[in-house]
Length: 265
Image (cartoon, rainbow, N blue to C red; front, side):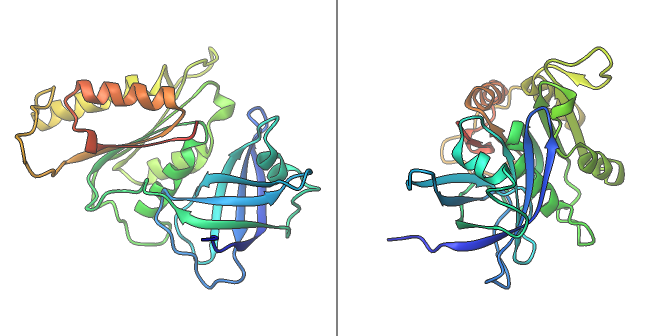
């Protein structure tokens, strides 16, 4: 069965990292009054390439639901048809349109909201931005229920920290949101965290356990025990990073269903 295609009009385009060639896009679906989706889901763009071949590319939504609008965060890939199609002004000017279908996917926050560790690298930040917006909507009710929310974002260089000012401002305003960018190839002038995300995720878990008087590793669940966790990890990025974080969490005795992940390679 053919998927229903929607026409998305480009309203805003911004290069948020010249070095990484990362772009932020804002689209409007004029034919719809609203475009409901769960934070963390994705849409698929559809377009014909120069050879007349239909190309489809899935992109995580980089925002929470907002009327008939949605946002994307896309790294331009040298040989990638769709990323160049989106980024090139002649191909897609402001006011230009693309075809999409969706929303799709099951990478969403579990209810009720628990303490949560959001872990991302690169454009894996896109669904995390959606999660954060849905939990702490600007001008709306706080949906975090006072739970501790950590966002651990890893990249190589300071120039590649996407949406940094936005997350820093939220962390300064909301006491239960903790923003932890970490660099693996930091310059000497960098005063923030260094190293890989899994190292900082481990520290969060150890400090949380000590604060709550919990022992690590977590004792295994009894057979047929109810799966009722007090914390979750949500991970998005390349397979190597996702696997490393999952291994570290498993070593703490975490159940596999506490570890929600999405890989994009």
